[in-house]
Length: 536
Image 1 (spheres, rainbow, N blue to C red):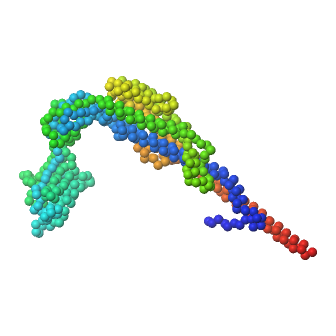
Image 2: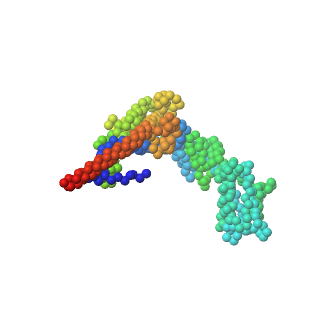
Image 3: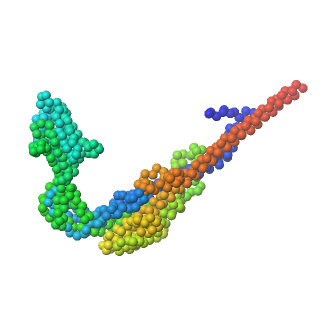
């Protein structure tokens, strides 16, 4: 609805519009403060959301760096991932043209002999020259007169597929159809097929190696027994073969050329001579462990710097959010500089982050109950925290760390990555390794931040850290944070204030209009009186 057109000051000569605007500015100061308070809360939310994202990304990046590919729904490290760490031990092959090697954390150290007897192969068949059934350029099928189509029938397991081709169809299309073939459930038949027009031949293979990988050509209707001779039953069967190696004198068969045995990954190379003995040496990778732990500590300290910067950032109380009118009176650069000050210190001494930092420092120093091996405290492996002014950053004595790894590498890993099955949170913390403790404390800090200041646009990232991180926030708080409810309350007060201001403005206009009307009457009376006096 359009505002009513008002005219003021016709009788009094007063600029009524300006006077009411000035009076309403005073009246609007209260609602402006509400807007400023709401804006400050929103800025604080954004700062907290960014901090949560920073912490979450650190946890995710650290897991990826260590090789912790999966955690449980509640954020628990999986022992299977720890056993698969590839930076704890190194494996060196004496002849990498025969076999390459790498080692898991649980690999048996020492020298191991490997002799390759047979490499794993795919099942494969190659056609004869297809010139008799293709065009001159070899790219399309061209059958004899009177023949419009032919059929190739292939069986894989219990599934039989018929491929019908017509004269004029591209040969490459048949190869693509074989590659894309599926069973009744939509699962791939696991075949590869390719056609070389230059040589006029088609090759069909299984995608995987191994004795169990096979296929059978039941009907070769393409002509001239294109896929070699059929057996007595009128079929052509092709199957792959397993890899056969001798590991420390014991024969091992495997469907693939990638073999894991006793924590050692062996990659049998193609084209190398068979029946040659190769030695694979496995030992603790001291340099790799030191580098991995040092890199983690460096990133951890960078995170603490970022958090501490926010906790200690100066707060400029005189710089409140600007009103729209104040922004109009300033240049863009002035507004930007003002808001930079206004946003400073929004997380100063933030309770969630402060508590998280305190718990991180305590957790790093507490003993790990039930730790297997020589160590149950971080200082025993040469890692300490600096002075209090450093905000709990970690300091590494690399010589002591190397000594600890040489003494008991598995004990170092257990100290860092031990898991606990305890249901009681306090007991779980006491029994957890230091990385698990750190992750749990960071999750607790992020959850408290979410409870107070919301999720923002980072829900997926937070759930990647821990699947159930937002369950309580959604189920118990209806996805509304404390600050969200504060903003809703402020907005309701703003609405009430806006209605009050509208009534107040109407009241002022009514008063000034009445004044103008009264003055108009007085002016009329004065004019009449003057006219009467002029008659005498």
